[in-house]
Amino acid sequence: MSIWANVAAGPTLPTDTVDAVVVGGGPAGWTAAVYLARACADTVVLAGTAPGGQLMDTGTVENFPGFPDGIDGPELMARMREQAERAGATVLTLDADEIRYAVGSDADEIRYAVGSSAPDKAVHEVVTADGTLRARAIVLATGSAPRRLGLPGESALGGGLGVAYCAVCEAPLFKGRDVAVVGGGDSAMEEVLALAQHARRVRLLHRHDSFRATPVLLKRVRQLRNVEIRTGLVVRALRRDDGGRLAGLTVERTATGATEDLAVQGLFVAIGHDPRTRLADRFLSLTATGHLHTTGPGGATELPGVFVAGDVADDRFRQAVTAAGAGCAAALETTRYLRHLEDVHA
Ligand SMILES: Cc1cc2nc3c(=O)[nH]c(=O)nc-3n(C[C@H](O)[C@H](O)[C@H](O)COP(=O)(O)OP(=O)(O)OC[C@H]3O[C@@H](n4cnc5c(N)ncnc54)[C@H](O)[C@@H]3O)c2cc1C
Figure 1 (cartoon, rainbow, N blue to C red):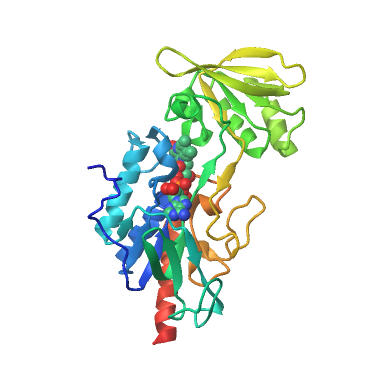
Figure 2: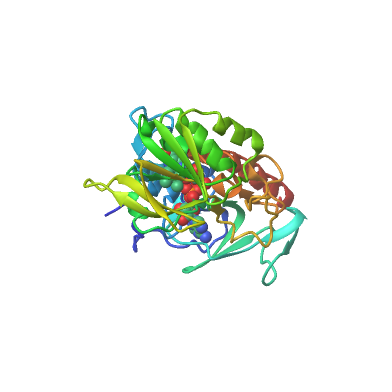
């Protein structure tokens, strides 16, 4: 049976209050769970009904330390899950549908943000389809999703077949190839800069005639000899070769509706990310980019006992290893918080 299966006979929702619930089954969540469980915290991971996170949509991950030959994204996620389970975390492939946060200025001064009065001090309630979990601390590691163009065949061309969302991750795979980047902001410029070091030619395609990107980045892009900037264009279709890989794009000139075919082997979509903040955006501040705002080290937030980790709080690095690092830091801070709770309630 697949390691990702929602095993009917597997762990069930604990009825006692647990130390920590980690929400999210990506690199940040699994790493937080490993550290929490190894610190002897009673830990439940709500890995979601689609566990594994963004790396489930990729082929070989070549930049995660410890795997000199690279590792398949889903395989890396399966190994992280196994490590969390071996450390003692209970993994449930359930979504957190709602969280009723215990809030207050300190762990010993708690009131409930939503719902009825708290049966315990400093206990948060996590609502799932199978019932409600009670936890002294929460690590939110719900990740984000890169925005897609929404073109037919786009999903099938992921996983190393030509359509990509992260040049830092995949640019070296396009050495000597012709690629295109779609976008007009700083992320798109960063993608172009990363790709220009490897690709033969990079076409930057933007629907408008002016760019949102900061002038210094745009200037750097304009100076590159192997970059061609094309404005006033939208991508209308993706073409595949006989092997199912990306072979080209059909683009449309917005002013005239005229179409043109471009031969490219790679298309990097850099039109933004949607962080999954739904569980907390009524209770926590958001950054200018819509990510969860942290108030201190280890992903501390305005809510005591609620920590955030990974891409849900990170618009800058967005890497598996930085998400894992953030998961580690959040778990260490959560452990300190749990000790503090013990002292307060002793
Ligand atoms: C196509 C692609 C290729 C990439 N390649 C690389 C690469 O080669 N190297 C690299 O370092 N990085 C790569 N990245 C980036 C990397 O995948 C992310 O930075 C990393 O996965 C972020 O980890 P995370 O744990 O914060 O979030 P995510 O990976 O997004 O995981 C979050 C998880 O939380 C779950 N979740 C969300 N809401 C809930 C809820 N309410 N209840 C329960 N669960 C929930 C989601 O279903 C998901 O499983 C790639 C990204 C993409 C999209």
